[in-house]
Image (tube, rainbow, N blue to C red):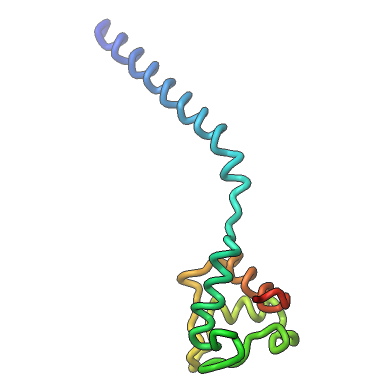
Length: 119
């Protein structure tokens, strides 16, 4: 029994060390994780012009899919656009992007399409 006590004490010291290291890592990384932007505008702009543009035309003026310029989108609701981006439109070529995009990314794209800031 006496020989178990030093082993347990050593394991507890090791456990406390691991907890300290994890605690320090959490404190150091927390500001980075909290401030991390889940949306990368440059990547999403490329996505709109390349991936969406492959069907909607590279200038987004239409192709296989309809025009998606701000003028064409002005009467659409942001939430409807977000849903269409994520879930597609059944029985049409519009695919669901939910497997590749988060809700925040789809909302950003909807805002981008509605904004008139596309270049």
